[in-house]
Length: 575
Image (cartoon, rainbow, N blue to C red):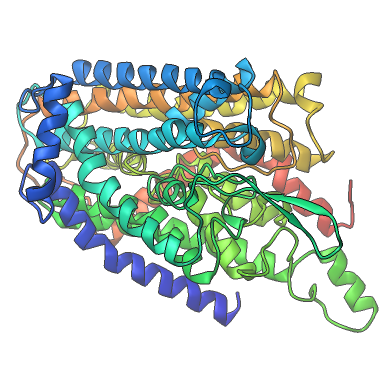
């Protein structure tokens, strides 16, 4: 790893660490019902929203009611988005005159944006109108992120309350997430991006003549507003096909680092919010440390592989008496504005969370470097994770870790002073296994059917990695891709849509069941047999649990893809 790359990563993590406590404290106050700096302005707006919706935010819900409200709200949003896409040709703000999306693509994208996945099986500039971007996709970017935050806060309440039947009010949690958190930050940073040259308009596409005399159509539109919430809400769907590698979405190194910080700031801050709400900030910092350890491990594997480059090209250099390494490293698929270090850091950031935005093409990474984003997603994106999804995902692993610790000492495990019994362990395992089923099941189906293999651009193990990445990204609600596979087909659109729905809602339901069960329990006094859930030993146990569960589940599939590809590449075998 180069000194420059190492320094960049250290500075990035230090800035993220500095943002964690103030943002986490602010979120704890918002969801604790305390007044904040924005309360004088936003409380009247919040009250108006409740009156218009007929909601009493003071009435709390049992976990079953909370779950039903969340599912019905998301179903309504998905149906509305599907209708907007199908009626696009008749709706306003469509200067390019784009027609309706096909039914299979409209279903896949409705599922994608509703579940916070933002998997894009289309070219945005030539497929969707400004109205669809603003009233459809951008709205879902807000409410899908707010839904994830609400679920995380509900789980935290379940862990912190004693003998309670309720875990909060879904409508209040979602409104406060969007109104007090997502919207203010989005407004401020949208203006920052406009200042840096990101377009924000409703103009028609511009026709220009190139220096060669050819005609080129340059798309534009409401880019800045969409860009901020796609990063802040860990959504990831770009207004351009090149995503955050496009100069209109990400013009320079300053916007590059700001957008990476936007991706991670809420997931990192929520870990502190957790510690604050349970009355022991050491608990939140322990989770933060565990996420940071896995994050650094991912960068430590990916960055040296990209900087070393392709060993076959390096061998040519040796034969020519030049250098044992590929000159400049593997620059294929990278933006020259950002270079290898920033591209690898972005790849780890966007897959450690459920964002999926890209500033380089993961398909062009070296096999082991490409395995890091893939494994980040398969671990459940708990390495800081998505907005809300990262917190409730890592808490599931925390429950499994204390269960393992309880087995070691031969007593009933405890977490935050509450006994973790068979029901909570079963629900935790269910939420973990529900991710593996669509990933491995749909990949297996795609790999043995012509409908699946016909979309592969690369034969051999890399083609298998492309299919595995498609369903890992969809089920993990990430949205990034290896990009060497055409997913806009009658096979991939519905199967990825189903994977997104399974990965989002079949995981959330058992998590809310855990919240309801833990809320009803009393706390027990700590004893000599109580395993402390903070400190280096706890961080090591939690990291080990996450990595071991991931390895046991996905190692055979990874062995067929990036691992064997790396071994064959080293042996000089290409496809």
